[in-house]
Image (tube, rainbow, N blue to C red):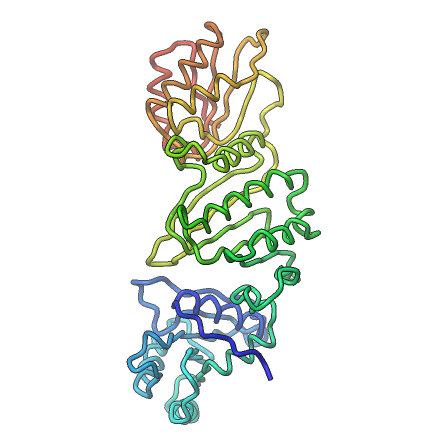
Length: 391
Protein backbone atom coordinates (compact mmCIF):
# COMPACT_ATOMS: atom_id res chain seq x y z
CA UNK A 1 0.00 0.00 0.00
CA UNK A 2 1.33 3.45 -0.95
CA UNK A 3 1.75 6.57 1.14
CA UNK A 4 -1.17 8.79 2.07
CA UNK A 5 -0.19 11.95 0.21
CA UNK A 6 -1.99 15.06 1.52
CA UNK A 7 -3.67 16.99 -1.32
CA UNK A 8 -1.99 20.25 -2.26
CA UNK A 9 -3.93 23.34 -1.23
CA UNK A 10 -2.86 25.99 -3.76
CA UNK A 11 -4.04 25.94 -7.37
CA UNK A 12 -0.63 26.84 -8.80
CA UNK A 13 1.02 24.01 -6.88
CA UNK A 14 -1.63 21.62 -8.19
CA UNK A 15 -1.07 22.69 -11.79
CA UNK A 16 2.68 22.19 -11.44
CA UNK A 17 2.13 18.79 -9.80
CA UNK A 18 -0.18 17.67 -12.62
CA UNK A 19 2.30 18.87 -15.24
CA UNK A 20 5.19 17.04 -13.57
CA UNK A 21 3.25 13.80 -13.13
CA UNK A 22 1.89 13.76 -16.69
CA UNK A 23 5.37 14.43 -18.08
CA UNK A 24 6.90 11.67 -15.95
CA UNK A 25 4.16 9.14 -16.79
CA UNK A 26 3.69 9.75 -20.52
CA UNK A 27 6.97 11.41 -21.59
CA UNK A 28 5.34 13.70 -24.18
CA UNK A 29 7.43 15.55 -26.75
CA UNK A 30 6.05 18.83 -25.36
CA UNK A 31 4.19 19.70 -22.16
CA UNK A 32 3.52 23.11 -20.63
CA UNK A 33 1.00 25.26 -18.80
CA UNK A 34 -1.36 26.87 -21.28
CA UNK A 35 -1.96 30.62 -21.12
CA UNK A 36 -2.16 32.54 -17.86
CA UNK A 37 -4.77 33.91 -15.51
CA UNK A 38 -7.05 36.34 -17.32
CA UNK A 39 -6.54 34.75 -20.74
CA UNK A 40 -9.03 32.48 -22.50
CA UNK A 41 -7.79 28.94 -21.89
CA UNK A 42 -10.74 26.97 -23.36
CA UNK A 43 -11.03 24.75 -20.30
CA UNK A 44 -7.36 23.72 -20.52
CA UNK A 45 -4.66 24.49 -17.93
CA UNK A 46 -1.97 22.18 -19.33
CA UNK A 47 -1.34 20.77 -22.80
CA UNK A 48 0.95 17.89 -23.75
CA UNK A 49 1.81 16.44 -27.17
CA UNK A 50 1.82 12.66 -27.43
CA UNK A 51 5.10 11.14 -28.51
CA UNK A 52 3.54 8.64 -30.93
CA UNK A 53 0.36 10.30 -32.24
CA UNK A 54 1.67 13.90 -32.08
CA UNK A 55 -1.80 14.96 -30.92
CA UNK A 56 -2.58 17.18 -27.95
CA UNK A 57 -3.91 16.12 -24.56
CA UNK A 58 -5.54 18.86 -22.50
CA UNK A 59 -5.54 18.79 -18.71
CA UNK A 60 -7.84 20.89 -16.54
CA UNK A 61 -6.94 21.12 -12.86
CA UNK A 62 -9.74 21.37 -10.29
CA UNK A 63 -8.63 22.06 -6.73
CA UNK A 64 -11.02 20.73 -4.08
CA UNK A 65 -11.06 23.99 -2.12
CA UNK A 66 -12.20 25.91 -5.22
CA UNK A 67 -15.26 23.73 -5.81
CA UNK A 68 -18.66 24.34 -4.22
CA UNK A 69 -19.17 21.68 -1.56
CA UNK A 70 -15.59 20.45 -2.21
CA UNK A 71 -16.82 17.98 -4.81
CA UNK A 72 -16.55 17.76 -8.59
CA UNK A 73 -20.10 17.79 -9.97
CA UNK A 74 -21.46 16.42 -13.23
CA UNK A 75 -22.33 19.96 -14.32
CA UNK A 76 -18.72 21.08 -13.83
CA UNK A 77 -17.49 18.12 -15.88
CA UNK A 78 -19.87 18.98 -18.72
CA UNK A 79 -18.79 22.65 -18.61
CA UNK A 80 -15.13 21.63 -18.73
CA UNK A 81 -15.77 19.39 -21.72
CA UNK A 82 -17.77 22.03 -23.63
CA UNK A 83 -15.04 24.64 -23.12
CA UNK A 84 -12.33 22.21 -24.23
CA UNK A 85 -14.04 21.79 -27.63
CA UNK A 86 -13.01 25.38 -28.40
CA UNK A 87 -9.28 24.59 -28.10
CA UNK A 88 -8.06 25.74 -31.51
CA UNK A 89 -5.46 23.02 -32.07
CA UNK A 90 -7.91 20.19 -31.31
CA UNK A 91 -7.50 17.68 -28.51
CA UNK A 92 -6.96 13.95 -28.60
CA UNK A 93 -8.54 13.80 -25.14
CA UNK A 94 -9.33 15.94 -22.09
CA UNK A 95 -8.20 14.94 -18.60
CA UNK A 96 -9.89 16.62 -15.64
CA UNK A 97 -7.58 16.24 -12.64
CA UNK A 98 -8.94 16.98 -9.18
CA UNK A 99 -7.97 16.73 -5.53
CA UNK A 100 -11.52 15.52 -4.78
CA UNK A 101 -12.26 11.90 -3.76
CA UNK A 102 -13.49 9.47 -6.41
CA UNK A 103 -17.13 9.95 -7.45
CA UNK A 104 -18.77 7.12 -9.37
CA UNK A 105 -21.48 9.30 -10.94
CA UNK A 106 -18.86 11.64 -12.40
CA UNK A 107 -16.88 8.64 -13.69
CA UNK A 108 -20.02 7.27 -15.38
CA UNK A 109 -20.72 10.63 -17.02
CA UNK A 110 -17.15 10.81 -18.35
CA UNK A 111 -17.55 7.34 -19.83
CA UNK A 112 -20.90 8.35 -21.38
CA UNK A 113 -19.43 11.49 -23.00
CA UNK A 114 -16.45 9.52 -24.30
CA UNK A 115 -18.62 6.80 -25.90
CA UNK A 116 -21.20 9.19 -27.39
CA UNK A 117 -21.19 9.48 -31.19
CA UNK A 118 -21.45 13.26 -30.76
CA UNK A 119 -18.29 13.57 -28.74
CA UNK A 120 -15.46 15.71 -30.09
CA UNK A 121 -12.86 13.90 -27.99
CA UNK A 122 -12.97 11.58 -24.96
CA UNK A 123 -12.77 12.89 -21.42
CA UNK A 124 -11.17 11.24 -18.40
CA UNK A 125 -11.35 12.19 -14.73
CA UNK A 126 -8.33 11.70 -12.48
CA UNK A 127 -9.28 11.83 -8.80
CA UNK A 128 -6.85 12.27 -5.93
CA UNK A 129 -6.47 8.56 -5.20
CA UNK A 130 -5.25 8.04 -8.78
CA UNK A 131 -2.83 10.94 -8.38
CA UNK A 132 -1.52 9.27 -5.22
CA UNK A 133 -0.74 6.14 -7.26
CA UNK A 134 1.32 8.24 -9.66
CA UNK A 135 3.15 9.89 -6.76
CA UNK A 136 4.08 6.44 -5.46
CA UNK A 137 5.30 5.48 -8.92
CA UNK A 138 7.25 8.64 -9.73
CA UNK A 139 9.33 9.25 -6.63
CA UNK A 140 11.35 12.02 -8.31
CA UNK A 141 8.15 14.10 -8.59
CA UNK A 142 7.10 13.31 -5.02
CA UNK A 143 10.47 14.53 -3.73
CA UNK A 144 9.90 17.93 -5.32
CA UNK A 145 6.43 18.45 -3.85
CA UNK A 146 6.69 16.52 -0.58
CA UNK A 147 10.31 16.91 0.64
CA UNK A 148 9.19 16.31 4.24
CA UNK A 149 8.47 12.66 3.35
CA UNK A 150 12.09 11.97 2.38
CA UNK A 151 15.47 11.99 4.08
CA UNK A 152 17.85 14.77 3.10
CA UNK A 153 20.27 12.23 1.63
CA UNK A 154 17.69 11.23 -1.00
CA UNK A 155 16.21 14.66 -1.64
CA UNK A 156 18.07 15.49 -4.87
CA UNK A 157 16.12 14.82 -8.06
CA UNK A 158 18.54 13.94 -10.85
CA UNK A 159 16.58 13.37 -14.11
CA UNK A 160 18.18 11.89 -17.19
CA UNK A 161 18.41 15.33 -18.80
CA UNK A 162 21.23 16.32 -16.44
CA UNK A 163 19.27 18.94 -14.52
CA UNK A 164 19.04 18.95 -10.72
CA UNK A 165 16.08 19.76 -8.47
CA UNK A 166 15.71 20.03 -4.71
CA UNK A 167 12.93 21.40 -2.50
CA UNK A 168 13.88 23.05 0.79
CA UNK A 169 11.91 23.81 3.94
CA UNK A 170 12.96 25.69 7.06
CA UNK A 171 13.42 22.53 9.14
CA UNK A 172 16.50 21.08 7.42
CA UNK A 173 17.36 23.22 4.42
CA UNK A 174 21.07 23.42 5.30
CA UNK A 175 21.52 19.65 5.09
CA UNK A 176 19.56 19.31 1.85
CA UNK A 177 21.44 22.20 0.26
CA UNK A 178 24.78 20.67 1.28
CA UNK A 179 23.78 17.49 -0.56
CA UNK A 180 23.16 19.56 -3.70
CA UNK A 181 26.58 21.20 -3.47
CA UNK A 182 28.26 17.78 -3.15
CA UNK A 183 26.42 16.30 -6.13
CA UNK A 184 28.69 15.43 -9.05
CA UNK A 185 26.38 17.09 -11.59
CA UNK A 186 26.36 20.33 -9.60
CA UNK A 187 30.14 20.51 -9.44
CA UNK A 188 30.44 19.67 -13.13
CA UNK A 189 27.94 22.41 -14.09
CA UNK A 190 29.39 25.26 -12.01
CA UNK A 191 33.08 24.47 -12.48
CA UNK A 192 35.43 26.85 -10.72
CA UNK A 193 32.53 28.90 -9.36
CA UNK A 194 31.44 26.18 -6.91
CA UNK A 195 32.51 27.99 -3.74
CA UNK A 196 31.03 31.35 -4.80
CA UNK A 197 27.74 29.83 -5.96
CA UNK A 198 27.44 27.77 -2.77
CA UNK A 199 27.81 30.93 -0.68
CA UNK A 200 25.39 32.94 -2.84
CA UNK A 201 22.77 30.17 -2.92
CA UNK A 202 23.01 29.59 0.84
CA UNK A 203 22.48 33.27 1.58
CA UNK A 204 19.59 33.53 -0.89
CA UNK A 205 17.81 30.53 0.62
CA UNK A 206 18.42 31.76 4.16
CA UNK A 207 16.92 35.14 3.27
CA UNK A 208 13.93 33.56 1.52
CA UNK A 209 13.06 31.31 4.48
CA UNK A 210 13.87 33.85 7.21
CA UNK A 211 10.56 35.01 8.83
CA UNK A 212 11.92 38.55 9.06
CA UNK A 213 12.78 38.70 5.36
CA UNK A 214 11.08 36.47 2.78
CA UNK A 215 9.16 34.27 5.22
CA UNK A 216 8.73 31.50 2.62
CA UNK A 217 7.37 28.07 3.53
CA UNK A 218 9.48 26.35 0.90
CA UNK A 219 12.12 27.03 -1.71
CA UNK A 220 12.52 25.20 -5.02
CA UNK A 221 16.02 25.04 -6.54
CA UNK A 222 16.85 23.82 -10.01
CA UNK A 223 20.09 23.81 -11.98
CA UNK A 224 19.76 23.41 -15.72
CA UNK A 225 21.62 24.75 -18.76
CA UNK A 226 24.03 26.78 -16.60
CA UNK A 227 21.19 28.60 -14.83
CA UNK A 228 20.60 28.21 -11.10
CA UNK A 229 16.95 29.03 -10.34
CA UNK A 230 15.77 29.64 -6.78
CA UNK A 231 11.99 30.04 -6.39
CA UNK A 232 10.23 30.82 -3.13
CA UNK A 233 6.62 31.39 -2.02
CA UNK A 234 7.43 34.17 0.44
CA UNK A 235 7.06 37.94 0.24
CA UNK A 236 9.36 39.68 -2.26
CA UNK A 237 12.90 40.08 -0.91
CA UNK A 238 15.67 40.97 -3.33
CA UNK A 239 18.87 39.96 -1.57
CA UNK A 240 21.02 42.25 -3.71
CA UNK A 241 18.87 45.33 -4.14
CA UNK A 242 18.03 45.45 -0.41
CA UNK A 243 19.56 48.48 1.28
CA UNK A 244 22.26 47.19 3.59
CA UNK A 245 22.18 50.47 5.52
CA UNK A 246 18.83 49.39 6.94
CA UNK A 247 20.53 46.64 8.93
CA UNK A 248 24.25 46.56 9.78
CA UNK A 249 23.90 42.82 10.49
CA UNK A 250 23.12 41.98 6.86
CA UNK A 251 26.52 40.42 6.20
CA UNK A 252 24.95 37.86 3.87
CA UNK A 253 23.79 40.55 1.46
CA UNK A 254 27.30 41.97 1.37
CA UNK A 255 28.74 38.50 0.77
CA UNK A 256 26.43 37.98 -2.23
CA UNK A 257 27.47 41.30 -3.75
CA UNK A 258 31.15 40.64 -3.14
CA UNK A 259 31.05 37.26 -4.91
CA UNK A 260 29.09 38.67 -7.85
CA UNK A 261 31.57 41.49 -8.33
CA UNK A 262 34.57 39.18 -7.89
CA UNK A 263 33.24 36.96 -10.71
CA UNK A 264 33.90 39.81 -13.17
CA UNK A 265 30.65 39.15 -14.99
CA UNK A 266 30.85 35.35 -15.07
CA UNK A 267 27.95 35.15 -12.58
CA UNK A 268 24.93 37.28 -13.46
CA UNK A 269 22.12 37.82 -10.99
CA UNK A 270 18.47 38.59 -11.72
CA UNK A 271 15.55 38.81 -9.29
CA UNK A 272 11.97 38.45 -10.55
CA UNK A 273 9.19 39.40 -8.17
CA UNK A 274 6.14 37.14 -8.46
CA UNK A 275 3.42 38.28 -10.84
CA UNK A 276 0.47 36.91 -8.88
CA UNK A 277 -1.63 36.53 -12.04
CA UNK A 278 0.83 33.88 -13.23
CA UNK A 279 2.68 32.46 -10.24
CA UNK A 280 3.00 32.85 -6.50
CA UNK A 281 6.75 32.27 -6.63
CA UNK A 282 9.45 34.89 -6.59
CA UNK A 283 12.51 33.76 -8.53
CA UNK A 284 16.21 34.48 -8.35
CA UNK A 285 18.26 33.42 -11.36
CA UNK A 286 22.01 33.07 -11.34
CA UNK A 287 23.39 32.70 -14.86
CA UNK A 288 26.77 31.00 -15.07
CA UNK A 289 28.39 32.38 -18.22
CA UNK A 290 31.81 32.64 -19.71
CA UNK A 291 33.88 35.41 -18.20
CA UNK A 292 33.48 38.76 -19.90
CA UNK A 293 35.49 39.22 -23.05
CA UNK A 294 37.12 42.30 -21.58
CA UNK A 295 40.91 41.85 -21.42
CA UNK A 296 41.92 40.89 -17.91
CA UNK A 297 44.23 43.75 -17.08
CA UNK A 298 44.43 45.99 -13.98
CA UNK A 299 43.18 49.02 -15.88
CA UNK A 300 39.81 47.40 -16.50
CA UNK A 301 36.98 46.12 -14.30
CA UNK A 302 33.63 44.52 -14.99
CA UNK A 303 30.71 43.32 -12.95
CA UNK A 304 27.09 43.83 -11.86
CA UNK A 305 26.43 47.48 -11.04
CA UNK A 306 25.60 47.13 -7.32
CA UNK A 307 27.64 50.28 -6.71
CA UNK A 308 24.91 52.30 -8.42
CA UNK A 309 22.61 51.47 -5.52
CA UNK A 310 23.69 54.33 -3.23
CA UNK A 311 26.35 57.03 -2.90
CA UNK A 312 28.04 55.08 -0.11
CA UNK A 313 28.16 51.93 -2.24
CA UNK A 314 29.65 53.86 -5.18
CA UNK A 315 32.26 55.52 -2.96
CA UNK A 316 33.20 52.20 -1.32
CA UNK A 317 33.60 50.51 -4.71
CA UNK A 318 36.00 53.19 -5.96
CA UNK A 319 37.92 53.32 -2.67
CA UNK A 320 38.56 49.56 -2.72
CA UNK A 321 39.38 49.44 -6.44
CA UNK A 322 42.98 48.37 -7.11
CA UNK A 323 44.05 50.96 -9.67
CA UNK A 324 47.74 50.96 -10.73
CA UNK A 325 49.27 54.44 -11.15
CA UNK A 326 50.58 53.65 -14.65
CA UNK A 327 47.11 53.24 -16.21
CA UNK A 328 46.69 55.70 -19.07
CA UNK A 329 42.93 55.22 -18.84
CA UNK A 330 40.44 53.09 -16.96
CA UNK A 331 37.57 51.07 -18.46
CA UNK A 332 34.56 49.99 -16.40
CA UNK A 333 32.10 47.48 -17.90
CA UNK A 334 28.66 47.61 -16.24
CA UNK A 335 26.34 44.59 -16.29
CA UNK A 336 22.63 44.51 -15.46
CA UNK A 337 19.97 47.19 -15.06
CA UNK A 338 18.38 46.42 -11.70
CA UNK A 339 20.53 48.75 -9.60
CA UNK A 340 20.24 52.48 -10.14
CA UNK A 341 20.39 55.70 -8.18
CA UNK A 342 21.12 59.01 -9.93
CA UNK A 343 23.22 60.45 -7.10
CA UNK A 344 25.15 57.17 -6.86
CA UNK A 345 25.93 57.41 -10.58
CA UNK A 346 27.33 60.89 -10.09
CA UNK A 347 29.33 59.70 -7.05
CA UNK A 348 30.78 56.79 -9.02
CA UNK A 349 32.04 58.96 -11.85
CA UNK A 350 33.38 61.84 -9.73
CA UNK A 351 35.16 59.41 -7.39
CA UNK A 352 36.74 57.53 -10.30
CA UNK A 353 37.86 60.77 -11.91
CA UNK A 354 39.42 61.92 -8.64
CA UNK A 355 41.46 58.74 -8.45
CA UNK A 356 42.43 58.89 -12.12
CA UNK A 357 43.74 62.45 -11.77
CA UNK A 358 42.52 63.71 -15.13
CA UNK A 359 43.08 60.49 -17.09
CA UNK A 360 40.45 59.12 -19.42
CA UNK A 361 37.51 57.12 -18.02
CA UNK A 362 35.58 54.77 -20.33
CA UNK A 363 32.32 53.25 -19.17
CA UNK A 364 31.11 50.42 -21.36
CA UNK A 365 27.46 49.35 -21.24
CA UNK A 366 25.31 46.91 -23.18
CA UNK A 367 21.64 46.61 -24.03
CA UNK A 368 21.01 45.32 -20.51
CA UNK A 369 21.91 48.73 -19.09
CA UNK A 370 19.16 50.84 -20.63
CA UNK A 371 17.78 51.60 -17.14
CA UNK A 372 20.61 53.94 -16.22
CA UNK A 373 22.21 54.78 -19.59
CA UNK A 374 20.66 58.24 -19.62
CA UNK A 375 22.13 59.08 -16.19
CA UNK A 376 25.59 57.94 -17.27
CA UNK A 377 25.37 59.99 -20.44
CA UNK A 378 24.27 63.07 -18.47
CA UNK A 379 27.35 62.75 -16.25
CA UNK A 380 29.61 62.20 -19.26
CA UNK A 381 28.34 65.48 -20.71
CA UNK A 382 29.66 67.25 -17.60
CA UNK A 383 33.13 65.70 -17.75
CA UNK A 384 35.18 65.73 -20.98
CA UNK A 385 37.41 62.92 -19.67
CA UNK A 386 34.43 60.52 -19.59
CA UNK A 387 33.08 58.58 -22.56
CA UNK A 388 30.25 56.06 -22.72
CA UNK A 389 30.55 53.14 -25.13
CA UNK A 390 27.75 50.77 -26.15
CA UNK A 391 28.85 47.16 -26.65
